[in-house]
Length: 414
Ligand code: PLP
Image (cartoon, rainbow, N blue to C red):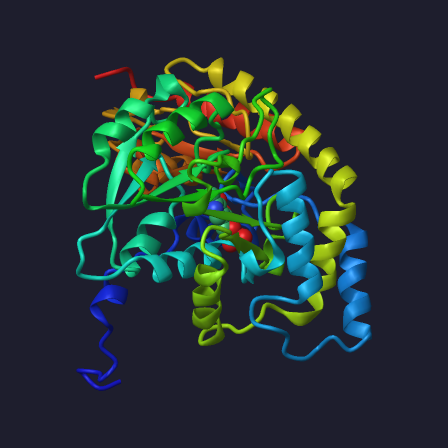
């Protein structure tokens, strides 16, 4: 290698951090490959396999030769199935032309923000936090400026209408709402969303991106409401969804975007961008989308019930530990406890813990339990770690035993 390489990075990529959640997953795999017995609460994906009938649809399509380029925005039947689902279940008035199918929900959000934001224009994106780790990098790569709106633990990490009203300015271009939330595991009630929408009524320049990736995994008795169904704001709502979480299809890479407010113009722009990037998603996956959305109800319900039981289990175990404060999960598959009572103290094997990063590192090293430190989920996440309960009950029990025992070995409060 020459001392100075021509391969210097662009400023924006040099500044870009990799996904910390994917990094934890990779570290756990590494440790397991070395023979370590790690209980993994790090991964943001269901532990279930994709239901067989969905796989069969793709296998059949592959055998039938669906192996060529497809329309960039997606095959008509798959776009139609998504539009039907969004109309029937989410009450969003949309047509197949208002939908583009992307390479996972992350890609959907990436493309939408590239289409919406301009570098150098100082456009602000209001981001309720704690928020999924990828929003900030995606916003910044598109040239936007992140303005965090911290949600209080006592309010299940949700922002209030007053908070939103106070944060909106002439520079506000976009509000992102993610309900149910990664990493909080909590969700907004329909009433709370209507209150936020009432604030937005007075600010017609603000676009709303609602990330509903976890809409089917809810179990706290709170109904899911799609912001795109609210008439007063529907023409400026971008709805993001996908098959990754609800159908245990994270590796398939299927997400979608619905924007019905401007006669398909925004979707056409996203399609142009996607045409210069990935083109269509994998062709033989389209029939699997139709199959999942048309016949997947029972399979999703079985997984939802399992997550509901696990939510109860992990929450009761976490709440029983002294010094841990954790809102009850009502959706998705995450618990996001405040662990700051242990900051300034020494772990059982002598690590000084001053942050969630220290805490998670010591927990993995000493007790072989993997969690994600809250730092990358926003400023307010720094006192927290994320537990993903996408693992079986016995693993949750063993992991919680280890966790409680490990915490019990900490030095006393300073
Ligand atoms: N949005 C949220 C809140 C997520 O947690 C994730 C994945 O972790 C995504 C979007 C992206 O999902 P996908 O795997 O379909 O790209």
